[in-house]
Amino acid sequence: MALSTGSKKIKTAVFISGTGSNLKSLIIFSILKSSPISINLIVSNNSKAKGLEFGKIFKIKKKIFDFKKKNSAEKKILLELKKNEINFICLAGFMKILSKNFIDNFKGKILNVHPSLLPKYKGLNTYKRAIANKEKYSGCTVHFVNSKLDSGKIILQKKVKIKKNETEKSLSKKILTQEHKLYSRAIEKIF
Ligand code: GRF
Image (cartoon, rainbow, N blue to C red):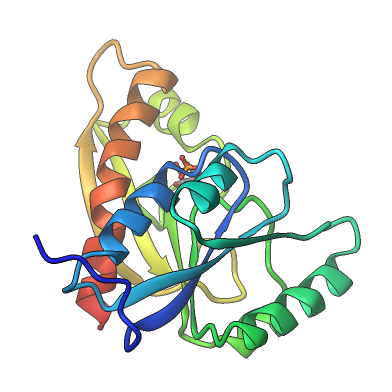
């Protein structure tokens, strides 16, 4: 398998808030020679995000921004993105809602992964709500980000069966495994 950090790849920032398992699979994807992206920056609102350790392991620059003052955090992020010549953003478990102004600066260049079959179950607690509604299927979606929460154009989705005794924990685990594959496939699809 050919690996490269590639100078001609699309410079990408990944935004995280927590575990960063999607970040990890995106990094592994990005170092394949055939990948259209390189990951040059990790952005987080949470200095304790476990996923930040991948910055160290893979020697990727990471930056933490305090979202208590969202406007100023976003301004600082935009400057940092410019400084690092970033022109593509992957949200991966990023738990803050970006403003319309921020999104307009990267129109059509921000993706997100969401643990449901959108347009169903936007927002939080997707597993709980899908199980409570006795859905037969749930899944995950990779979509473009626009200024409406979890409402941008869908790129790819993967269905997952909800079993009789499914718990939030078992469902989230199954969906997360699919997210890891779907995100890279969605990136391949759009470039
Ligand atoms: C994923 O399920 C993602 O869809 C949701 O938050 C979770 C993040 O997981 N928005 P991780 O931090 O990538 O492990």
